[in-house]
Length: 381
Image 1 (cartoon, rainbow, N blue to C red):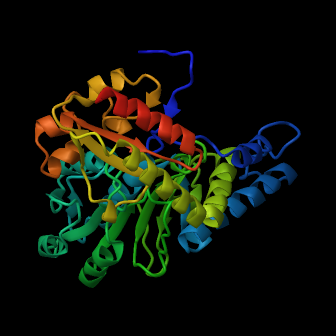
Image 2: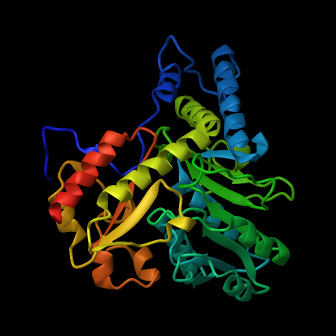
């Protein structure tokens, strides 16, 4: 590992984000003896104060999604939410059928639970998206059978930033009477999500993707028509019996606060990050071997995936010790095969190996963008 005296420019916001200082302060206020440290399940004064804070945070999460607070279940993050949604739905509704549909470009937190269920006797169909990354709606519709109980689809791809048309997907699933689970880890807090307008049944989110703490997230479960999931964790019956465990007040308060600020500042952040992306691309456009791996018209500005034809991205990163970016998602960091997402989109192994992901956040500065672009361009001059 290369350690430099100067702090590297952080362009890996898709992996995780710093905690907003306002959020951090609210969390600290729930940790010490002078603060709101009680167990929310306790009936005494301290417990009830904590419970009030927890329920306020639940309201804030629900407000971000245009949901009802009773539809929000706290989890340790999107990975657990995905597992609870997929395994919990499969186990509870398997009498209706044992067929699940998902896509080859999903996060490992969806693909691995699906593979686990296959070993338990479930049938999983893994559809290949169109070359541009979009889900083929006609293909999805054709894949649904009388045995299908669940479709799991990512809203925003964590490697390319591509945004799926949730309304079109949800129209298919609702017409077929099939549950729809959405992995919104990369979209929640960044772009609007309205579960009242779009018939989503289950939705997973992690707040460390939008300036909250790691280790906390939520699962949205539609109440009308009602859907439940079989719990993965037993012991105490917390969270409507679907996720037992003492509620971490400080993390939940951080989740709620991050959701509150995200909703208030969403458009401003989106516009600012769009400007950062455009500056970055403009600054590196002179690199002749540079190619985009996704159509920006279909992507959020927070993530861009590019490739440097004929160059190995790992080698490029080693020559850029003052830039913190990635060659694939964080969950694939130890893989030597490169991005399975890009391979599923039709890229060759050589193109995959030459690809890099840059992701931006509200704390990224224009000066950092220009410095990073200058360093990258210098390698090819």
